[in-house]
Image (cartoon, rainbow, N blue to C red; front, top):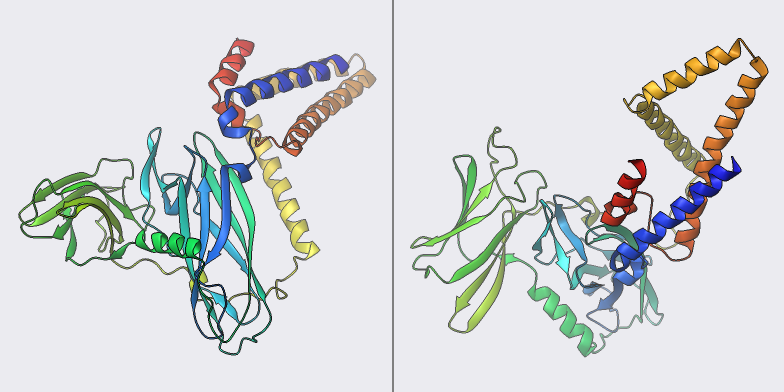
Amino acid sequence: MTRFLTALLVLLAGLTGVQAQATKAQATKAPRDLVRASLVADTTRIVPGRPFTLGVRMTMKPRWHVYWRNPGDSGLPPELAWSLPEGIAAGAIAWPAPRRIPVATLMNYGYEGETVLLVPVTPSAGLATGTPVTLGAKLSYLVCEEICIPGSADLSLTLPVGAEGGAPDPAAQALLEQARAALPEPSPWPVSVRPDGERLRLSVERPSLPPDAIRDAAFFPYAETVLDNAAPQDLTVDGAGLHLALSRADATTAPPAELAGVLTFREETEAGTLDRAISVGRPPVPAAASAPAVAADAVPTPRADDDALTVWGAAGLALLGGLILNLMPCVFPVLSIKLLGLVKQAGEAPGRVRWHGAAYTAGVLASFLALAGLLIALKGGGAGIGWGFQLQSPVVVALLAYLLF
């Protein structure tokens, strides 16, 4: 047993080391190094009753990305859990126009480099002046390249409260103005969507538009299941305007009565090249947009009963998963062979069978505890890994295939 556990730990340490070297630019850094987040405001002083804007600035390392409100074929959008003083309410996120990010055969919608999510904030007219207040938020996100790593950041910004507004910080003002320019604008032209065989045809009415004036057009739906995200979006420009052919996610169902989303394109004008983003239809209103802000001292404390239910529920699902795993063709026959061997030995030496069963159980538990301890130690040392990430490394997969062969 000791030899087995020693060999298992050596093998796991070796595989983890190889995986860490093979994905050095991907998984050896903590998520906080992949995404740097901060809060910025368009004012240096809060005035009671006067709305202002907060920006959640997210800067990603090269080749890594975070997601739009509709992440596309995979991923999760960033989320904000606000902790605000009484009398201050935060609205819904205003999302900048995304870009298409292909990952293997999937198509995701998100942001690379840097993005700023804008959030309107409204202080009540009765907010007391003369005392600074701290605006806090818990930012949760998923950052991805070839692998995905969940991350979070605790953000805060302290501003004084006064009867008159302060001069905005020039750097913050420029950053927020750039973020506002990236927001989709209501379309100044009529937009229509109609079925076109198994596809949808989105048209923007712009008569006399030069055929070579529009390029790099892309449509991003608000709904996650309405389009085949990875399918090509074919652009045509004629005398009536620009048209985009979109593939439906399920061509066997009735086409949607309305298609809402964001249309982006690059337009060549006499003044130069413009990157345009226009909104089509009405975006869905998130539930959090109409909810009042939660006071910092009013956050409910989870009960011990809730935690116990969560733990027992997770244990039950783990047990169910183990039972399903044992029914697989590569496991079930092995269990029957082991059982027949125990039955045969039971007639010869019952005490020996019990000892073998106890040793077998102890070996399984010890092996998994050793594996869990190794992963916890590696994560505690700053490695951004988890069980399963190593199977995305070609080097580790090749070594495992060689070992099993």
